[in-house]
Length: 304
Ligand code: AMP
Ligand code: ZN
Ligand code: ZN
Image (cartoon, helix red, strand yellow):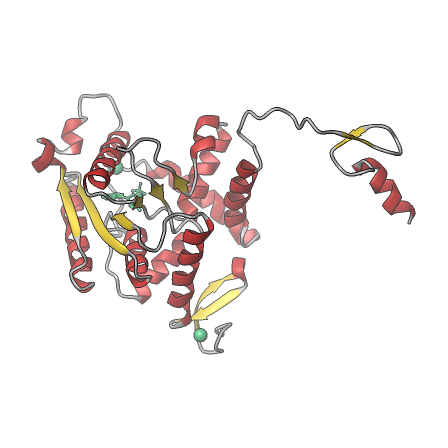
């Protein structure tokens, strides 16, 4: 397998982009792809201060590394939820520390939920009837918003990639959760001074691509899943999408991008039907096309 750019030995094949890249060109490509994503969705400006939510996993650490390399002013935020199973939270925290040390002491903050608020997340929600995962999400969102506001950051960046976004999209589509479908986006604008702008700069990158990036650049990360994670469900959808992807490379990305495009074009908004309708010169039927309706154009093309 040869690198599309230099003909050297390729280490990554990305059939959805018709690209094979070597160990030098691959990280370069990932970094420029993230910059293009930031620009495409106008996520933030050059001089923005970004709070990177890091879990110790491959995606968020790869993201932090990329933003640092792109020259953005960043700080990491790790939330220690107090998940003790196999020391999950503490192992993750030490990997974040290790990352910062290896990146010239990149600034980061750790919020330990027990020390700051008085109880670990599993404890906090034991009797609440809530699944720990939804509790965990709620606590994380709250802390991210507060810390971003108090630290005066312009946005919070998370490590969500295509596989995450497409799996959630599929789940929401199967249930036609129109509320969620309306909101899912690479950028969530701030709708209140105390609610931070949220951005997902890896949303065009596949999960295997962020993993390969972390491996190639020697970024150690937690491989273990959160023991409470409702991942089983997400993994099920990720697996289905990967089967589709194998048959039709790029399908996963297309599913997500086409959804964003459809949303841009007004799907999921309650917009009235287009008011401007033309009348087809040939058949008199109303049409949004030009002088001829699509039906008449079809016959026209057939005849000529
Ligand atoms: P998850 O919902 O676990 O897939 O995580 C999605 C994103 O949320 C990650 O890529 C991180 O950016 C962020 N995140 C998850 N867990 C934490 C955590 N404990 N502390 C800070 N950020 C987190
Ligand atoms: Zn190359
Ligand atoms: Zn969880």
